[in-house]
Image (cartoon, rainbow, N blue to C red):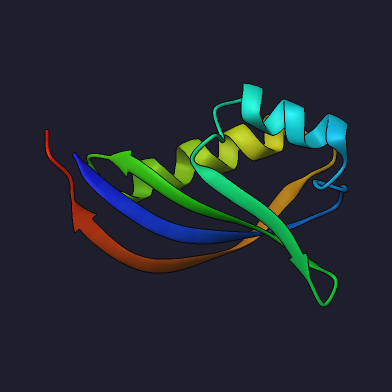
Length: 85
């Protein structure tokens, strides 16, 4: 498994509310930090997966299913680090 770091830009719903934060955690986003900068909401992920596309797809699915109205509009890839496994 590889640890992939990437940032999702999220629109359409307030992901910073307590309800949304709880829902995101319950949906499996405990490997992410959510925030807002200059009105842009983001989720910074460090997610283990076999492939980058798998990591991103699972994160998008979790965000969009956890918070009604939320949609991921951009993905920014950071670096990858080999994880013990």
